[in-house]
Length: 330
Image (cartoon, one colour):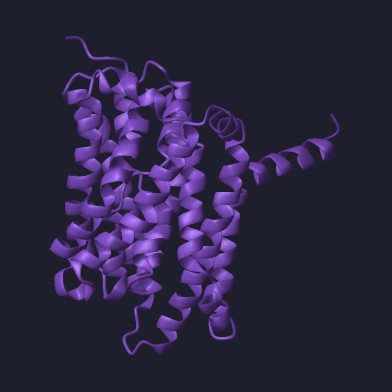
């Protein structure tokens, strides 16, 4: 193969694998920098419809039958859920004390939202782990988030949220729980379920476009918030937020592996606990954040970018070094 053909192939491969990350950074930059002329555009986007559609598409391509395998040995699932819904929110509450303004609310939202619907299982499988465990963790946390997420925000943010607990619960029940359950009911019709499984990548691509739409709206609102805010965040504030979310994810990823090792779980389960316990879903994070402000959305986006980059490196390393986390001697 000629050098120019090889270069073109490498570029094409990079764009195919990283298009969402590149698009995410692009819509953030455009929305934030052109927030004033694009303000009317953000107001016209039917956010609730986009969110509900995205969550339906993500859930309808999710084959939940594999969760029965994981339910036979629930310990790894329980550990990952405890990290995702107990330890991580507490750690986020501590980190939020270092950050100013609505960025602090955003970090609390990062801690309170559930694990990713599909990515945790994908990265677990990529690393050679037990993707059935990761799948059960994501399903259970997403089904419970309509109560758990608002409750954590009410506990950690308190009056700063200025949103009644019952209103947050009702909103998440309608926009998260309902589309997820409806999608799984639709899958019970075998032809639809088989089609959705076969078209998983296509449906995922459409869902990612919906996520980019909500990020774009949030970026516009964040730009307007910065321009209209009397308090300046400053370079130190932005850096503190980035360090905080990156540190949160890496710490929880490490804690998941270490805790599973301490309980003498097999290597495959430890990988699943690490990824599913530390990952957070972007779509629900955006939905919750935009109830507060555009700035509250940015820590969620930063966390998502971090887990995309960090977990890819970790998964590839674990796949190349299968004996690195060999099961401990009992």
